[in-house]
Image (cartoon, rainbow, N blue to C red):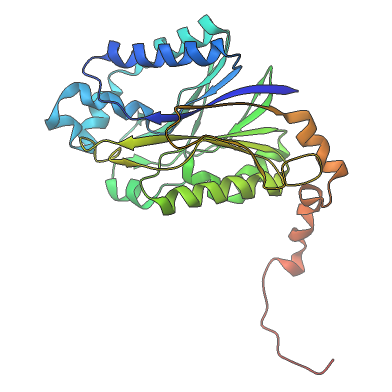
Length: 297
């Protein structure tokens, strides 16, 4: 199945009203939907742009930002539900740090064309998120049935852990969506390597959306790096680099199609069968390395 993707390389803004933010998002989604996009992917931490609405005393402090933005959750749901319905697209609305008990979960919400919504919480916290003391990890790994095939979501750092994507692939995912936000070139490189490794191991397509630009008013969105891209396993019938498409520096969107059926079919005609050979790692004798001495052959 050919899936037309719109992957954001989203320049962080500084809205003064919710309607300013909503209008910008609406115009962007309308534009890429008009270009034929069936699935739109926005980056991690997108909702934290809304902290700017509340002035310096709030947007300069992460905890106060989260508290204030959480109060806009109903408006967030209405905005993205309406856009998905209006344009008949699946829409991954980046991530929203949603209050759960005493903390906030970094939650990626996937909106369907019929108005339904599903979500995946971030499972592993970065050093910054742990140090914040108010962000808590999720506790469930999911896949979602869509008209475009079965989809998994791995939020930023989660793409660096192979067993998550493997479990999603074994549950039938043919496409992994990675909304990301990185503030250093090293962080962007780790996410890129993670995405490419997950595509290689599971022989599926991985689409990564990123934040871009700089924003000195926010402790979480201060500097942003990375490139929007779609990765596939480098094998027969697919790009030898494993990069199906990548946004240029300065672009706002990457618009490209991926044939998920062809990617899946490559598992049977590939030079290597990494996905099929994966269980061979699980033999008990191979699960723990043992110290071995040198000996004469």
